[in-house]
Length: 445
Length: 147
Ligand SMILES: Cc1cc2nc3c(=O)[nH]c(=O)nc-3n(C[C@H](O)[C@H](O)[C@H](O)COP(=O)(O)OP(=O)(O)OC[C@H]3O[C@@H](n4cnc5c(N)ncnc54)[C@H](O)[C@@H]3O)c2cc1C
Ligand code: SF4
Image 1: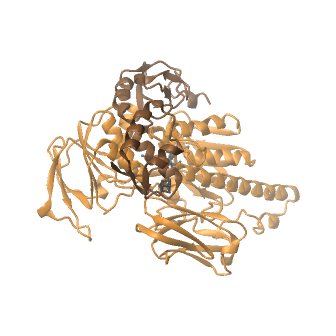
Image 2: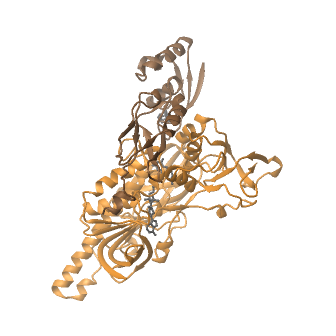
Image 3: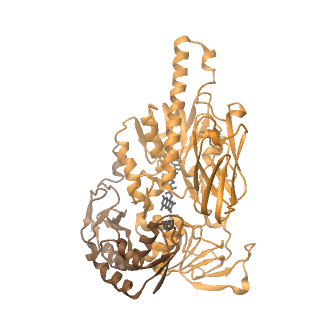
């Protein structure tokens, strides 16, 4: 086992890690190590072969792999970014002035990196079947949407011949089309909520185009079959989401695809004592995407589940730049210490942007607070000295509304939980108060 | 004739109704082969309601006269156990989706392949080419191990 000192280490080389690495290198972060457990960079994008990525960021409609390739091509310009593929981060431990990151791979065994700063970019994982509690047997033919997607798009296998999809978020819809294109009959998409949380565009192009029925306000109440799935029982649910068994019906199928939600991947964050937000399931971050632990930054799906990769890239660039600023200010402090050999200067921890919100005076940041019909807001802590882009998720669909954040008000024709609202708040929108409440109200007009 | 369409040109998802007078319908259908897009005259001849902006009207018109889609899928790679993602470089007529899929399923490519490389020009007679969606080299893990 050996130890290596680096300026910045990034955990995960999906779109978040890639954008953060490039932005940090551009901002002069010094020596950067980019770690991913997979052999290939690009994260989940490599299996998202459909188009629809990058409309805002590149003003072009790209497929997932094409979007990732744009960033991978750019990596070549930065020899200071060292890539450690097929390398797993197994532990993160904040130490005095560094963060200790333990990695393991087949070639080098255990390696510990002492990093001045790290960026968490581990993405998210799928809720497994257990999380939805479908009664019935445990036959073969049940897949999460992501594993079915990987099976088809990377490994080239078909999961079955007749499928039912539970969950009508974008991933469920995309999989309905993908299965259909490969000749698998999609009998139905079943959605518990009274509406689909997917983009309208995906409902039209993935379901309507192929005449696939969507059952909203329904759920799968039973999985039938001993060795292989033979069918599912579907029933409507009432307003409290209790299924009405009297109106249940059976759909024959050999495959059930579960698209029942994603959760940020935060085991490592918890280990490092990073404060998590109940509403997002990810770390609480400030305008710089720094977490509650000094020198630990986070971006991408590990912070909150994004529907657009463009938003991931945008916030990851902020995280990369901020991490670089942190590394550089720490380096300046260190140089100062080395030169004058004065410990007291080393411990001087003010004036720099290097501080985490947990170390600042409480009034240095404004805390965002979820008001009426708001589920979550990222970032949670706003700096007073510059504008911050807020990513807001509403709790329920609503039409003709006004969304407001402090002095900022914007009219919207509609909001749905499936589409984050992006709002830039500037210092002039905030009062002297410590909190900024975001609310959605019915528009009077 | 009356068509109901959900606009997908932006996330608003307006419900648009297009009412065609007899002449407008015939002319729209006949003009589809030319693929010149939607002219202002075409749009003004139909009664389009429910859209919030001009883009919506154009989208709705194209959806009922000549709907198009980008097709994405994967193709087999010689000597590899991983698939190569591919796409049609431009949208193709919606009714050709399965013909294009049929052609895609019969392709096998050799490495190396670059993003954007044309694998088949004029796939299934659509006049649109099929291109690779990513770089793939002939060494396992290619790009990664090289660094
Ligand atoms: C099925 C699906 C369809 C989507 N469709 C669209 C779309 O049409 N348009 C759009 O804009 N967006 C879409 N998105 C959203 C977008 O792709 C994601 O928001 C984006 O990929 C998130 O990027 P990320 O880097 O945060 O996470 P990821 O892409 O998940 O990357 C995380 C990386 O971290 C690595 N990692 C995790 N833990 C460790 C560890 N302990 N050690 C080492 N490495 C680790 C993983 O291997 C992975 O490579 C879709 C997402 C999914 C899942
Ligand atoms: S009509 Fe205009 S506003 Fe409405 S969905 Fe289409 S593009 Fe958006």
